[in-house]
Each structure stands twice: as structure tokens, then as C-alpha cells.
Amino acid sequence: MYYEGYNTECNWQYILMNMENSIPTYICSGTLCRNAHKTIKLNNPNIIHSTQLVDICDGFDSSSWAVSNLKIEMYEVGRAPHEVEPAKKRRAWMDKNQHAYRCVPLSIANTYGWDILLPADLDVEWDGGDDRSSVKIHGNDHLYDSHFASGTFTIQSGNTWKTPEDHQIMCMPIPNPDQYDIISLTAIMESDRLMYPWFVTCKITRPGRYQMPAGTPISRVVPIKLGDIIDSEISTATEPEEYREYRRWQTAVRNNKPEDVKWQKFYHKVARYTSIKSPRVHNNDA
Image (cartoon, rainbow, N blue to C red; front, side, top):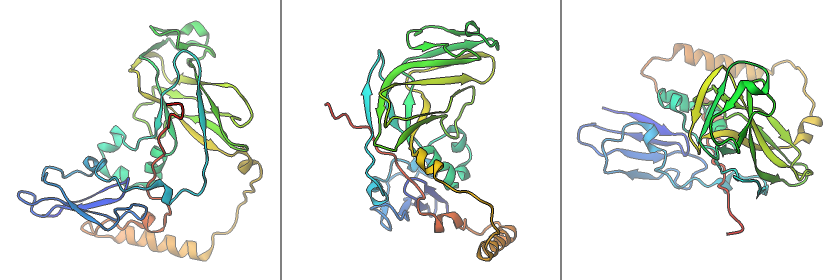
């Protein structure tokens, strides 16, 4: 019996032969991984799901695909500096459907940037009204405050961000989240010019009372370049013939593919980035 799976971080693939008494064998096919084309064996025949392989590979080298040396600094301010961590790939709803991790655009969005974590337990209630009093913060109200009303609350300043010239910071909702009851609002700050503390404002999407523990990812931070949009040009055009031919061929293969044919990995074969890891935050003052 054969089972096939993969790890979207480094494209570990494995085949488990004779599930009852054989040792799983894994091979990495990730083009950006130092362990590419190497095989390993684990003395654990119980591992048969790809989501259990997330921490197996230590070979991913972000420097192999980095095309810039962007340096971002965070200055801790306020009573509770925001804890920031690299964005994570895993989602509970995606764990329930293994095929979701095969979608490279989704997986990359999951891991692109850094997540701001809640500085303390959050207990917030919204009655559906539009004024500030319609939002009630139960505890830790020195960190959370209903500032803009209309079912929103603000996480008090924890950091000031500094980016190089012509680079800005965008704060946005966590991509492809497990919950939509509370989402971060999207904001762009000219962190290359302003010495201004960073506030995170969230929107409660429906009336009710909600609790989240400290350390829950609440907002995504990504660096952007506003100049790229300002100086861009976008226009409609006729689809090139090679695009049409490829699309017809791909559609035909998918429509006529027998159920026992393996996953073709069309996207993986042409994409430059099939997986990424955002770097960890370093403490230069330590």
C-alpha cells in the first residue's frame, strides 16, 4: 500500500510501503532546500499525514531566494510592546482538508510577513451599536480601548517601526484565518519618514462577546513600496496564444484525468517560490 504526502515548507514527499511494518521514507524535492533530493527515514511508522512533517526539515535556506537585504527595526514603546513572530503556515481549517496546503498561493500568503500577537488576554463585547459605548472591554482596558467606535477597538501602541527609504509598513488581517469574528483593519504607514507609534485597530464583525488568549496572532505586518503602485501602469490586452494553448491543455488534462493519476503539480513546476519562511525577529540590544 502506498501513501503520498508532502510538506509545503520544503516539499518533503514520502511514500509509506506496507503501512503495517515498514518505515516511512521521505525525500525532499524542494528546489530551495539544502536537503533537496536527500532521503531520510524515521523510526515512527505512525506518521502518515503530511501535516505531521512540518518540523522535520531544517534545510530551508531563505538566503537562497532573497533578492534584497531589507532591514526593518522595531523600537519598543508603551506599556506592553507587541510581540512579533514570523507568520505561520498552519491553519486549523486547512488541516482538516490536506489538499488545501497544495495551493501554493494560499500557503505563501500564510507565511508572508510577521504576525503581531495579542499582548494580553482579550475579552470584548459589542452590542451592534455605532457609538464607543457599544463596545465593552472586560479587563486589560489599559491595553484595549474602543477608540473609533462602530464595533472597533484599538490595541495600544507597542512598537514604532522604522523601514529604509521608500519602504513602508502595511498592517492587515491575518490571511486565510481560522476565525472572522475579529479581524485587523488594514492600514499603511510611511514608516520610512514618520517617527510614530504603531496602533492596531480591529473590527468585530458581528455582535457578541468574544475571548482570545494572549499570544493569539491578531494582525499581519508586511513591508511594501508605495512607489511601485504610484509608478505602475496596468492595462487590458489580448491573451497571448501560448497562454491560451497552455490553459486549454491544462483544462483538458484536469477534465480527463483518471482518479488514480497522481497530482500533476502544474503550479509547482513553473513557480519561482513554492514555499517561504519569513525571518525571525532579532534582539540587537541583547
